[in-house]
Image 1 (cartoon, rainbow over the protein chains, first blue to last red):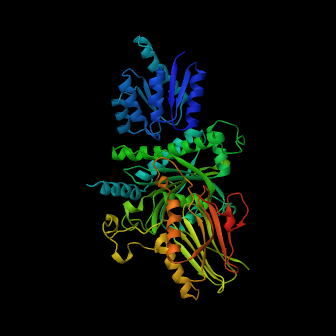
Image 2 (image 1 turned 120 degrees about the horizontal axis):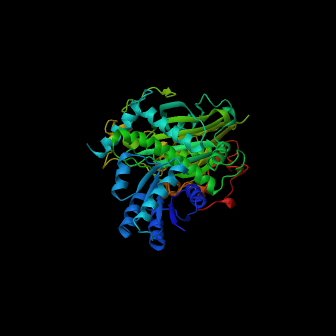
Image 3 (image 1 turned 45 degrees about the horizontal axis):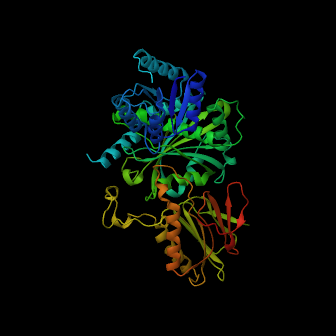
Length: 127
Length: 226
Length: 184
């Protein structure tokens, strides 16, 4: 079963996204801030990550950079309310694979996850 | 230009572009639209105001509302939910959403996709949903402003409290440690008419940065429905 | 008939009218100081926001440059350290004796803690320390207090008898007594 990490400081968002992913047959791990996300990624090496940006302790952009440093193949999708050109650019430069702007749209999330994982599969680098 | 000058200039642009197609209205509409999509319910924008408020009159600003026909039922001690976010380094100030506890429970039902009336108490999941609502509203507002600045504008994570109305509103000025006697308040109401649901969205530019309302050209109060 | 007179942020009220009830609604991290002279049956209430008056003499912020020096602090009643001596002077001017004044102290709650917010420096606790210091300097005893905690309080001072009551959300109004002190 493919494992996806959901990173958001809002328990509400983690629950909604996790429910959706589980419904589609994925295994889910959760992290409540950027620092926990980096640590959990190192331990569990999930197949993909859905990452918020505005979070306490360590924000999502910093966590993205650290995860990509540890694993240059990491598949991280940003899922944030901050839909600003400068922030999208920063995230893409730091290696994000996709950028989704809240509010929560189940269809868009699933399409993005499937796209990122499919690319993984095609390249034969599934962990 | 120094950082402070940039901050003053940006607030000044927001406060002085108040026509329906202007920066402030666009940002407010964007915030309302995101919230409407989040809860999948129609929302109207009412009473967008910019007012210079003496510190001792801040709490009374909430009564200044032509929608709330049962306003006599609210008082300084009415149980109220407040969601707070700092607007960010480039636009220093305090943002806040306030709503009655009954409306907050209604919102939680919508956010959790439950039947209205299901949630009767604010638990940690409900509080998290309301905090996320605050994050979405302010972030969406800032997204529209950032189209103009081209620089990123990032809010703080949200914090939430449930207490008396007076406590909830006074906390906003404590958080930015207001040392002036007067502050500028941008306030707008998001309304779901069908369910008589009312959310107040407040922005308080940090007066220690932006200075007096007169300096920013804020005179008599201005009001529009965007 | 009771006459409820609210003191909003940065306001103080002094009264010797036995019908007056001086009220501060929903105080959070702010501080409320009630002073009462039992012989004169006169009292005052203060609703202060910040612990200390900022020192602008060395480093005057840019935003104040266009304001005359005489007015840079505006209304001093919002700063605990300056407000308490002003309240004592106001009571004295109306015939109260500073030697008879007793204080009751409320507020200073830690109502919001979240990353990035200045309240994590706990302004409520700093307000209480500033109030206690100012009252001690003036030689005024604190008879009772309801300080700290995590909730807002409505505080009432009844001029008729000097009684102070405290009410929190969903609770009944209760008389403030020394034994019921709520500490940090």
